Length: 203
Image 1 (cartoon, rainbow, N blue to C red):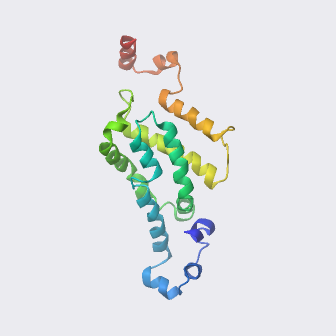
Image 2: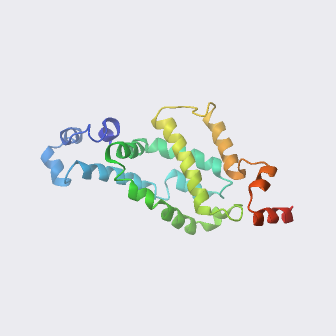
Image 3: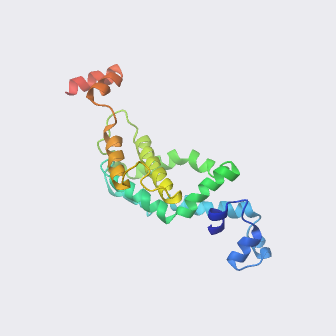
């Protein structure tokens, strides 16, 4: 993990892996068919971790009412990236050097994993999401926004990338995710006729 995340895939040799592990190259090949298998094995540690109920984001998601707990999810996303920063770096290594071959399947199955999580924690995730907004899409959007923000901050070393303190930005993003960007006039103009009628009747 150390070598792949700091030197990249092609920049890391089996010899270096063996030396770092304190074993012979023959011993490495006894356990792994090739370097790609080692890379996949290390990356899969992260896939297993983010499905664990104790993964910071999962823990925060299950312990509060979505979307009331968006700020807590942001903090949890930061902690997850901090704890697993080298594994997260491997995602970028895979994209740049291996055309995303090892992460494609993981991301293509992400929606189904979130759906299973939501079914298991339906009561806490229902919150006050308005009709017509799929819970899975809303949760996935929040996770993508927060995790990507902190990947840039922690992995790329870009603090305050929105030009202000990250905690402040997380609060602003949480409010935008909860309430949207449009004012009442904009909402009425943008809403489909059926939704616009429902809003008028409700008010």
